[in-house]
Image (tube, rainbow, N blue to C red; front, side):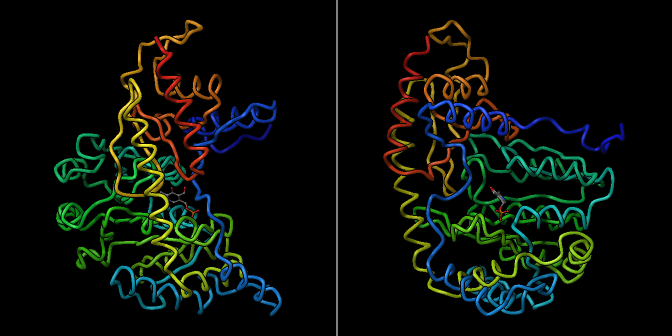
Length: 400
Ligand code: PLP
């Protein structure tokens, strides 16, 4: 038999995949499952973006485009960065890819050599660790304590940086905690990073528009312009514009880095879908008012679920600044037993119990490198959320 890549040997099977396939199987068996494990908004793509795609097809925009994106989309992205982030990128400093996820991956491919350290504040989005490993990097996980709002502390960042550090991944608002850095908090981190000019910064701003209670979103290159030449500012239309399936992400960065990523694209994926690019251009240039309305709808749902969780024995959760996830602490449930006599020893046991016995799918904290917590997405209808809260409350209440 031919062998597979030795790199893949270093991968752990994902806890998300296990819960997801169990949820699918139970659903196929006819069980009533409330799925709060998904990472996508429950809104539909706006009509103007869909219409732009229809017109693009009718007009024959069905061919290869520039590898790094159409001129129209790059202009729309330039305007977006100016409008939302006060960042001025020239056209050659912008790049479009088939989602923020491939952009992160291609960005890492462009800079990492074997043994380079990648600083990842945890809890973190599952893909960061796998991606860093895939491209030869060594993830250096830096825990962000719950007491500090799950945010990276400047002194912990300073301690984590070594001569081998190549990259830090910053994600605000964060998946899975929803934590977002206010300007002074981010400035404290950029002050540390300024002292280490061998480190690249990837800012994953994909949840930028999903923030609450008057929170003002800021991004590293904006807060500290002296980091502009080392920062890749990554964003996309998946979350804010509810366009997960269209697969468009984009980034602004220094010319040298953008050219390097373009080189990777040239030899791998080439351009993202031409029709999706037309839809994304319209999404970014058309009316933006609905972004605030959607954020408010998410905020109402956040408050509903946080309120309910804090009434449940053994769970606690603070309201986060953004995204559409909660990351409740379930330490109070560990060591308790189910009615069948099984002991809950980890968030994984609790997530499995919730799914198998109560039909609620959430993701255990081990998937995000920080336990004992679980991630719950509240991008679901109020009816579903109320039902899920009823079930989780009963599940907690019945553990002995
Ligand atoms: N970054 C974070 C933190 C995410 O949570 C996700 C999706 O869940 C992505 C990036 C991927 O975004 P895209 O759909 O644009 O690839």
